[in-house]
Structure formats: C-alpha cells, structure tokens
Image (cartoon, rainbow, N blue to C red):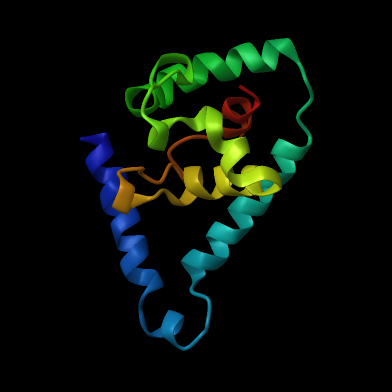
Length: 129
C-alpha cells in the first residue's frame, strides 16, 4: 500500500510539472522544492567521508529500502537495476543523478519518489554504501 501511495504522489508531481506553469517556463513550487531537496542531498553527499561505520550502515539501509528492486547488497545481474554501475554510467554527474533519482523517482521505469518518505541522513548513508 505504501508503494502505491508513493507512486501516486510521484505521478501527481509529474502531472503538476507538466501543467501551465511548466509550459510557460515558470518553475512550479514542486520543482523548486525538489531542486532545493536535491541541493541539500548533494551537500550532504559531498560531506561524506570514507567512514566504515557509515558505509556499513548505508549497506543495511540499502538492504532495508532498496534491495527489493536492486537486490541484496546491490548485487543484481540486471544491468538496468545495477546501481553499482552508476559511476560508470554517469561519471562526475553520479551524485546528482543519485539524489535526483531517489528524491524525484523515475516512475516510468518503476522507481518511486522517496522524497518525504525517508530522511536526508538515510539517503546520504545509502549513498555512502
């Protein structure tokens, strides 16, 4: 049920983003809030260090929140779900793609928006993994 709610919210956000304000080039409140959330995520991710405790906690959080689709410990054979390849795919843009994808979702690909569903600290720890 929770997934349906998150997907529903993400779907409404997409509809909102395609409304008259978006077509006029005026950012909607949702887009502005999303951009601010992505900026906060990027700042938190940039402040991460190679702390083994954070990485292990990130692995545990990943397995609790993400492994249903991305496999336990991110070890999936499905290339399109393999988050271990993000660095290869996106290079220097990887942190921003990660933050935006987690916060906005990719509903058309089955990835729900986690904005408001999990805390920024949790997202940062997952990133550290």
